[in-house]
Image (tube, rainbow, N blue to C red):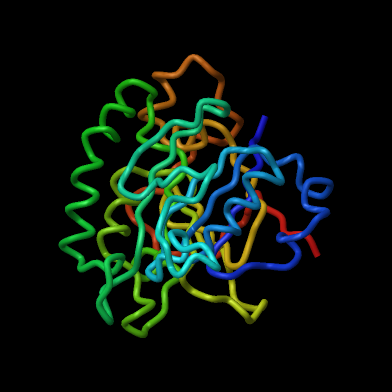
Length: 257
């Protein structure tokens, strides 16, 4: 049975910040924040939906500022910061990892060089490798603010993706990568791409994403044999080598009109 995740990023959307949210989206299993969202917005989602909220910081650190308190910084109540961490959601069993911030372009605590992002990933690697041994997969969902290099990024320096995240996707093969940072106002632009075994989804400003449990394992024939659950028909077909990003054929997501 797939899980439903409400993923949000970069802008407060009136369709989400609404008194009717629970009636319209009470079916979601968890909330994922992909950066640059006010703390009060994440707190509203935690309260309105009564679901776990996982987030990473954006390059503006809006998540640490509550309006009306003179820029006081604190963690959003009811939310869990995934930045630089690997965690397993106790309710769904999904394994999540988070990478905050953006490429360094103007200075700031959540702007990183390629070397700094690589070091953050290196610190997460022991847990990811342990997950692969213990659960048969390193993780299910990577949550980041910035995209991977050449996978839904932009040519300008501020919105260029990280090479380190591209290497992360190639090595650890999460089933899903959810990110923000790149604002898609033109609906003709694709918001989802396929990179190897990973569905890469730009969630700006929000998406309801259907997450297949154990999809990261089912896409890798080396790991399927180690699991006791049956794989879906055709799930073992894995592209060989690294493929260029292309529009995905099965998005497994929806967005309300």
